[in-house]
Image 1 (spheres, rainbow, N blue to C red):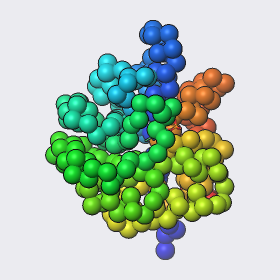
Image 2 (image 1 turned 135 degrees about the vertical axis):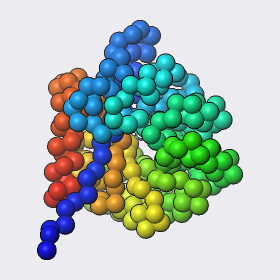
Image 3 (image 1 turned 90 degrees about the vertical axis):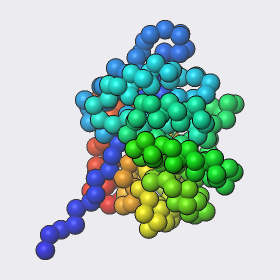
Length: 248
Ligand code: PXP
């Protein structure tokens, strides 16, 4: 009898915050596209970038360059607007993760309100999928949001780990993530997670067996100031691998 091996878990690096630093001076450095290459060289499985309506960090030219140049896969984070869907259909990223957007927020503060305009959301998902793009919905770890994601036609859910990141360790936030991951998997959805994850808090999320992809940005770019981006990516991969293998 062969021993059961833990399923692999992917690390997608969100490079928005490299662009945030560049936009502080509206100049050309640091370059998020170069950063994406360094992350890939250090073992990232994919590159995530969010083109916000207010263009506060990633710009249109960045998205064009990333889509053309990634050697792994591009996970394009965006709001479900007609203009963004049209852009994605033209660029054909591997995956689109649909996120809510509020202009005044500091970062994506909550999951998509999947009940708000389901017909419009379902139509965006259908257009993206018809173009061969895998579609994930960024949702709170809430059973009704998981069920709605399935009904809307998404292939994957990304569970918002923000509440857990504020209250790490064993507790209601982690239990909610575990429960939502199980429900999503049982409904045939791929399960991703992200927001506020760090080397210090990633282990319990990585240990949820249904979770197959993490999207991590801020901590890696912060850590890069001390050790460089490639080393920050390697540290995170090591932390993820250790937790997955130990099943903790
Ligand atoms: N996933 C989604 C959908 C996000 O919007 C963000 C933040 O941009 C992240 C993951 C990454 O969060 P953080 O930068 O806190 O690691």
